[in-house]
Length: 345
Image (cartoon, rainbow, N blue to C red; front, side, top):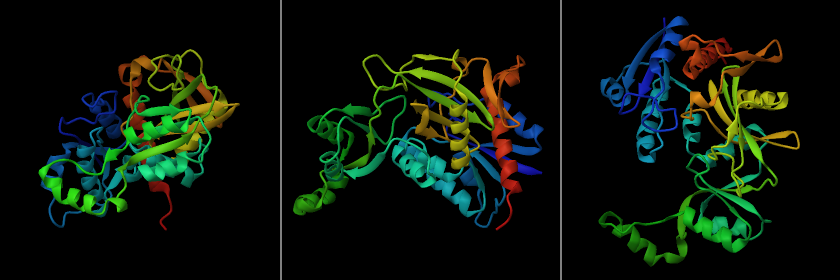
């Protein structure tokens, strides 16, 4: 029997709702896995690593795992995930999608690598690199700190002085005033011309004018749940505006584009922020790991691809079918089936 481990955090949950302390209904996801022939085990991540033996093999075992919005705890999780892959375990989603969580820099690089249409964005790592770009581009421009959600740390600059201030504030000092940093402070002062003023991760992105809304699409397996989100008043951001509708379904070309993005990113389930400028969709951001799931916002309908056509479906009234976790579980099972059907290279 195939085995899947639900690798949970310090609270024994997999947070994938709007708050770190709110977890998915793992009992429902487990039932979907069991109904599809899996042996399911739920275990806290620190308990899992404590139980690993030197030569223990987990080859072929699937892991549906937690992430975190707290970077220091995410770094802890990162080490365990790498160890799992070294021992032959299969991460769901892939490790690169864990890297993309709360990491807009990585997302920009992936979109370019995979050829996914997106506004032009340039990741930078130092103040000097950012200023070199800001000094020769046209305005307005969008600056996005690598971490953050619901439009946090996303700013617009209409001129170079404003962009300079935003960039400076988004980056961090390259030293801290504490006892453990005195040695590095000494090196920086001694060689001050060789050290950047600030370090960090910021994306300098093309500004797309005259946008009044975007689409938030959840692609769970081959089903699409949707929100049309309107831009905040006197703003340019739709994410986090709190102004959305589920009464207007997305056009077919948005659904096609959403599924194409999921296929290119090769993720079991994915959350996509899509703009539709002149009927040409572009991907702003995505998350395949730890994306916000708020069932009350998503209505009672979804679209499912059947025989090449998008058919509008009503969510069944039975409790288990009325939860997004049910569709998340199906998406993972479908993804595993596709993985196992791939030819061995």
